[in-house]
Image (cartoon, rainbow, N blue to C red; front, side, top):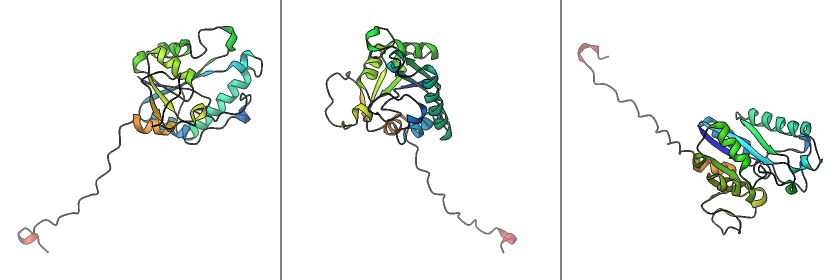
Length: 203
């Protein structure tokens, strides 16, 4: 199985000034959902791993979070894609759980659930914590320059705190462009060559 684990906030939806607390507030980063569909069509399974401390702080409830993710699923499906599942950590930072990124617990649950060797998992996101969790997992790491990393450039210097060995992409669509093999251009059809006339069959 081929597995990509995406971050949500800043990778699939733009970052706001505060938590997204309702489905009405959720919008997709342009091109992100189409990128998921391209992954699916190439045989990749896509799972989202997200910290949602607003649950632990009582800013929204599970019903609201499920509604947000239901909208996300519908919009992905509308462009021909599919997110297999959304795994989330509901804990606030001071709860010292093992699933809140940058701890790798959430990503370990995903790789174990899908039976994928951890070094084969592609971990893609725009925030340091997501990529640090991926590094602790032993996955292949990809930074996209959206969300928290929107000020970065794929060939520019990287800030401290990012794990070594990651690859940098302008967007989720650019990651997909580089992950998937290039489709060879279709050669134009050769012009038909008239067959020589044979005996009395010639006109």
